[in-house]
Amino acid sequence: MNIIDKIPLATQPKINKAHLVERLGKVLPNSSLLHKREELKPFECDGMTAYRKVPLVTALPETEEQVIDILKICSAEGVPVVFRGAGTGLSGGAIPCETGVLLGLSKLNKILEIDQNARFARVQPGVRNIAISEATSKHGLYYAPDPSSQIACSIGGNVAENSGGVHCLKYGLTVHNILKVRFITIDGEVLELGSDGLDSAGYDLMALITGSEGLLGVITEITVKLVPSPQIAKIALVAFDSVQNAGDAVNNIISAGIVPAGLEMMDKKATAAVEEFVKAGYPLDAEAILLCESDGTVEEVENEMLSIKEIVKKAGATEIRVAQNDAERTKFWMGRKSAFPAVGRVLPDYLCMDGTIPRKKLAFVLQKISDFSNEFNLQCANVFHAGDGNLHPLIMFDASDDDQLHRAEKFGAAILELCVEVGGSITGEHGVGIEKINQMCVQFGTEELKMFHAIKKAFDHNGLLNPGKAIPTLQRCAEFGAMHVHRGQEKFPDIPRF
Image 1 (cartoon, rainbow, N blue to C red):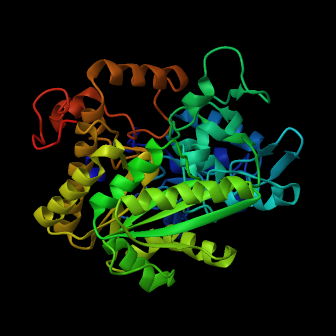
Image 2: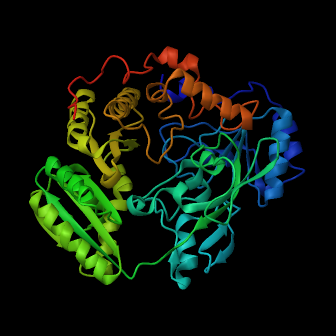
């Protein structure tokens, strides 16, 4: 039995599908209401393809008014609702309920306003991440958060998961780059959080909805911050003969007060997969590589790159290669952003973990991941946002083999629990979804989980929005038996305490 079989994704065992389709058909055209099995299959999973559930109905509204009407109907009928952006999420957050409505927001894809003077754009949730920068580039502006899936992922999904990207070290996550969010509660009430200014009165509920994984409301409009395009950006590819030296280099760069635009690390297994796929020019003999980018004025970038070169040399860099032009810079980044599909070519499936750790524990954690790889007899490639300690171990397996899937789940759980014990978190940007719901019992205590449930109930009294995701019940934690491993008995006694 795998993770998804243990989660009650459906809260209503019996729903009259014909009646529901009839009611929804009064607010949606036929082309926007899918209820035949062959129409529903494309919506059975998100980017986490190991787990699948076919929804009862898929609704594809084109206006906010239709979203409101759909939610009112579902609330009245007691029908669960899971909303979905582009389906690129990696934690199973958009996997539907078999007895519920999958609410797809891909048709709400308009850029409603661009204010180049105030530096913001007001967009609908189905707008692709990169489309914002494409539309604002003529004004010398762009939207900074850039997940690896930015050519496909939607801004609504970015808000729901609080996505990051390779430039989040300097420019922050989604929560740091939005001004306002408009969303609809399960009862059809419209709420608008934030303001066009830098601050707003009252509790910071916009930060609460950001990263809420569809548990509190359905996002219909986002106002994002825009930043000026830098005069110049330069990237250095730095090779090391050990992961320890690469980790030391990362720590030394940050300790020197330098905040690069991007600071990414890949291990040897990841670079081998990427080089075969993209031909990015990565050195295949290196145990680890860093991609370190500086942006700003010409003078700022030159000075920063000189400092970075000195630091990585002292840390034991075996090669330093600065991109000579924009084409080479793009190729370096394309390699990093293609790491996930590149690894997907090695074996049919992979689980992409998303833990965050203190940078000083990097070498230790990577060694433990290598040990886990041997223990569970599964390959693992490591790609991560080194500057902020956000790891993305890619556990490779074949989902057609139930034993491999089971071992992959245990491998992933071991990584996440290790992240907690070294002082980190089970997620940095991918969310909890269903993938990490057991490890929420490790990360948080009873009173904290009670508070999470109280907040959920305040917005969604009957628990109809994305049920069974992100926040475990206390009963589940008791059954899992892993509450507070980091506060009680140490699971990893060999962790260096410094």
